[in-house]
Image 1: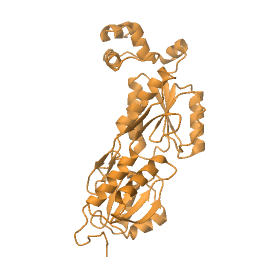
Image 2: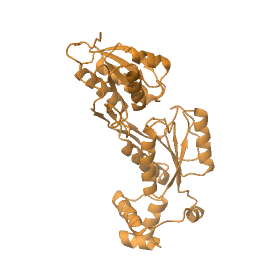
Image 3: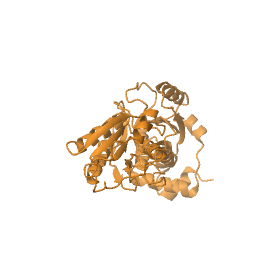
Image 4: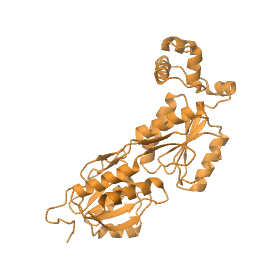
Length: 330
């Protein structure tokens, strides 16, 4: 079985440096950290987490609290977070809040009882108490006083608006996400700003980030009175595809649909979904890297990181037929 000195020799560093990387007790340069982690993987080093916790007083587990694992956005994010946590020698404890603030509080409290070294948190609500005994990095939704890694939701909303205009759509239905969430509010505001004076929002309804549509929304999709529906996220967009099909509408011939997130199966639904791609892998990896740095240096300045998004054009949204120059449907 490989020992610390074997890793140190293979990486060309001291045993103390290997210990610092493994235990997160002192930051190393990225190049040194990569060499140590590569040597650990190559030699199959497996530290004893229980002995290490007793020796150092530092836990080698991280917590992750997400709002809803049934939303396909989150399993992809969890995978990226778990992969990076494992690279840094941490075990990940995943908690699903079920889109309930009370359940979320219970999860955060339970992670304190588990004595985790830190928590990556996607809040159900962005205004929450931060009185927890561990460092926190929030993802997707900024919380004052926390390190944060988010996607550029405003950029995404603007990209959708610009694309809608480029496709010739002038009457648009908008299924916007919960306005209490800054991410949803930023997407909506930027989209509206992008189409202002060029296109009309024929109607707007607020929906949760869920594939379950209310009867009112299903009824609206059956009689859309628009040529394009812009959706809060991909789960909502896929539900709209289903509702349109059930109503006898063809997507995109009768109705175009645009989502947000680019979850892994967005390319496999029929028709494949035009959407905005969030950098899920980078969001997850960067969040854990930021948390690792916060654990090593609790007094470091707050870190706020915004990652760019990109429009992904597929078949669910198309150019409006020339016979309907303003997006009107008979």
